[in-house]
Length: 220
Image (cartoon, rainbow, N blue to C red; front, top):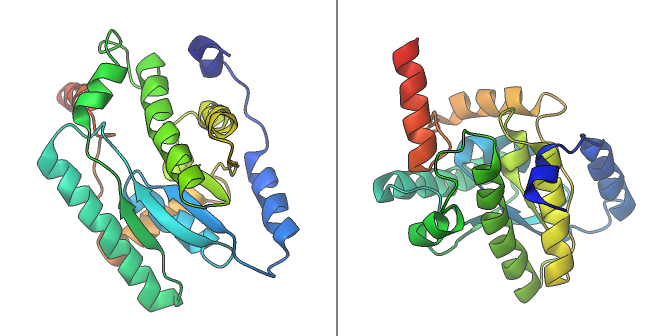
C-alpha cells in the first residue's frame, strides 16, 4: 500500500478490536506490551486503560523532536507520569528511552518538508517511529507493540494502524490495534494531565509542526 493510499484509508473499529483482544486474554495473565509513547499527556489515559491488562514498557523513541531541550523535557515527563500512576494504581509501567536520532528523522522526511501537518511527511514520521518500536519489540521478547499516537484527534488512526500492521509483518511480531481517543480517551488524557500537572506541548515535536503552529497563533 502506498503512503498516498494510507492517507485515504477508512477507519475501522479499532477500539472494538482492542476490546476483543483484551477479552481473549481473559485476565489470566498480563502479556508484555511495548507501547510507543509520544509524550506524557497522550500516554496518561493509555496507561490508565491498559495497565490492568498488560505488563507495559513505554518506549520513548521520538527523533522528530528536533530541539534537544524539548526532547529532554518530554521524556522526563513520561518518566514522572509512570511514577505517579504507579503510586496511584499500584501498576508499574517501565520506561525505555530509545536513541535520540533527529538526523534520522530529517533524512526520512527529506523532500516532504513543506507538506502540511497530517499529510505525507507525517506518514514517513509514523513509519520511522513504529518501525523502531516493532524492531525493539521483536528483539526483546515482547508479545505485542502499539503506540499512544492514536489518542490524538489530529492523528490519522487508520494510517497508524495500517503502518503498525505493516511493521509487524516485517519484524515478525504482533501489533495491537487502537484508537485511544474512543471512550472519551482524549478527554480523559486532558483530565489526567491537569491532575498530574503534565507539560502539554501545543505542537507535535518537529521543527515543521512548530513553525506551522506558530503561524496559526499569529493568525488568531
